[in-house]
Length: 261
Image 1 (cartoon, one colour):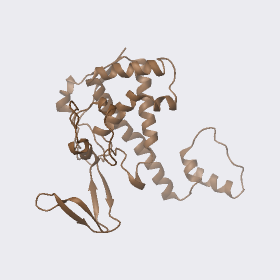
Image 2 (cartoon, one colour):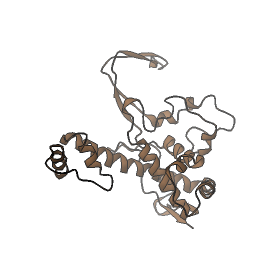
Image 3 (cartoon, helix red, strand yellow):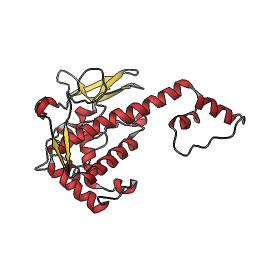
Image 4 (tube, one colour):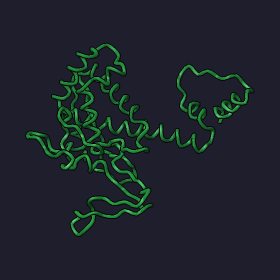
């Protein structure tokens, strides 16, 4: 509560404003509200979403890159051409890197860090499908109804990619090149969910993933899967939700990779 008391004293003119040379999340939040519940919720959101979800996405990304050395070679070429192997990447440069963006988007598509979410219906409405004996008829949804949905299942639903061009990879296959000619329809790609309650940390996650991946492959040229001790990748790593209480898409065991120069 020291930070909260300091903010209150500054607002009352009892002490001079304390300048912080860096960004302090607690102070920034306390300048909006000193309510304890608000501050707790803000910090929990930042610590959970900014660490766990990013780490899970990065784990899946390294797993797939280790299985696709051709994608790693393409990424290294893009890094060398647009940044160099010794320069620190800037925000604008990271945003302009097409192969890097494709890798991140494809990982988020196939492995959304939060694959389930809930919403409450604000007014009586209907959905075009879901009713009837075959689930193909409209279905009514009353105000106040709780709705559970899965963006993971949405992302691998073949209907989201129709009409499918010839040679287009299956929906459940990791292939960053699909983003060269696939432009998702609204609500067909929602790794951070959507609407007024979408993930506020979206840009933070994208920057963290982009920056870390670039710095790693500025230093290393190859990535190999090292999972012999715990079984094959197909048995040990499963892209489906493990129901142990975590609202995340998790691996069943360790993902072991080796970075090689």
